[in-house]
Image (cartoon, rainbow, N blue to C red; front, top):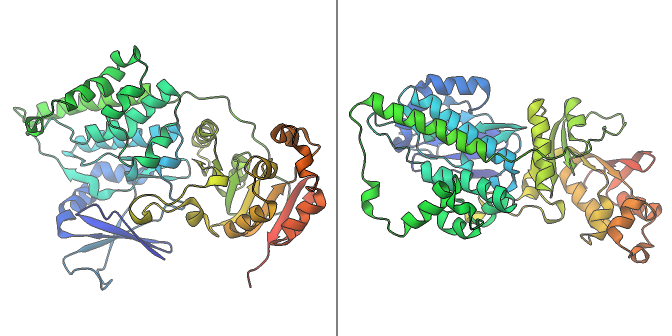
Length: 434
């Protein structure tokens, strides 16, 4: 399947097919591509892994205009979106955006936009992917035009989580372009909204929007290029300090389990619940961890980032996995991205929650597993008399008298072969599809 992205950019578009990422650059985007390719600052970020690399390839795709330039990028293994990121990852993406903008400023270049859509994560590492966002700056211009966009998509969601406890990622489910000051001001505690940084980020901009005039968009020019650069350097330092002041606090790290002791070496692991992610990553696997608990996923991301572990931690409820979003499903659903992507799926301490809390029959759970893995499934059986089962059943144990180990194994065998078991942890192999 070929997927077309970046269709909003008049400078070009991206097509993703299998393992290739091809960017077609129209004449309108040629100057931005050249600014990227000639930038020493961009080259440093490419070398460090913070910016996607590019290679110009022949324009022989047939569907491209002869005037177009075609470049190829390495594919980020598993794409994710801001509506799936815990706040710590949103903060990291914002920090990368500011750091890149600051570095580009040194050579008279900048970013024309500043949104989480410009960033993907390779494991725990943010990578800036929109190379056509890099442009030559007007030397006398002291204004960073994406400032309001950066506030809507990074600062205000982080501020609202800090003040109200509402997870930052939820703001992007219905609002692709983030949160406006006008919609945020009423959600802030009344006394707090009159003090920094709330005052400057939300309250004053919301009031200014009521008296907005075309005059505020008039270009401003300094006396010389040095003055404009000084103003912007100071602005970026203040912006980074403001962003860091809104960084989510680290919580208590969840209990990390060791990987089950089965003789397999998976390369791509989906860890539902994230309890074994670091253990699998330490064995060389590339791991995607998902859980509905945003704080837990944020803490897992911190641990993975601190050790450069190949773990992508996402706020995804497996029972209500992220649907396709955006124009004609431009941001594909989690299950579409995950379908047969992994060679091992892991679910520890979770089957009983899916069955009791989410009321999903085990047969359907195993069917979903079979759609995700091309090889292995590691799953734990939690019996009815287990304290963990009783906590979620809340006195309704009698409704699940049928859920025995034999019933569990019978459901598993409809899609998998039972290879081994270690106490209550099973190693299953998916049967080949007919």
